Length: 275
Image (cartoon, rainbow, N blue to C red; front, side, top):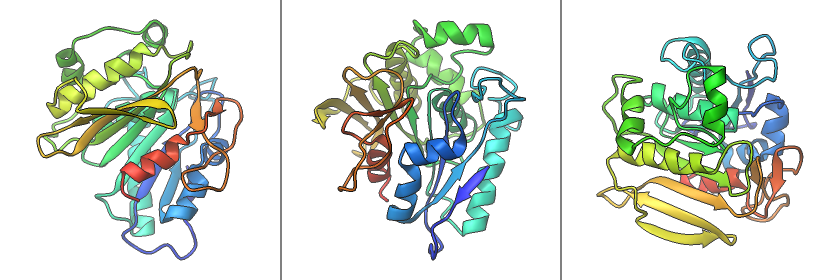
């Protein structure tokens, strides 16, 4: 793992764990996605787990391997240990810990939220997959494209079976490009159905609007709190939305799977998490 902690960071600040995609590395994703600059700007500890080629030749997190997405085992447990270490190392607020990731990192984000819901207050899944969609590499490809269509109750049961946790559940921000031919846009719908069912809220949006011209939907619980939200980036392929620049709400650097769409996902997430 890599940890970035801004100089002079006060105790009681949040932690964000950011998981890179396939063929990426931790530090490159941390810089390109905008998370590193946001850690400095908003004041939080950034944890960047690094996949090893010995574990996956393409440096993907193994979101589809049952041994790596089970509580107390494999990569999920390793990431949880990194998270706990960073909380202690930075004197962070354990109630303000978040996880996010792109593609395979997005799939692993969903796995972390499902297997360690007691550790994370929320998460952001970018071009990712529902938890439990695949349990083998062969199965992973049909999950990625065209995707699997389960009922909300079936998806939610996979999350509830992943731990003995009874709630309150982490909030989830779900990001997807409409022209993604690597991870089918259908996965955004299935993720939304999974986490609205876990939260026991309707799969019909409480409100819709546009952000930077892109469709945005929110799903609120009985208290009016947004527990699930979706961003559909019209025309975007497979990658992390970024908006390079120094203006308010801007962040990130364009590159492979880091797509300049005039909207920085990382900045929107920190805003929704109250940083």
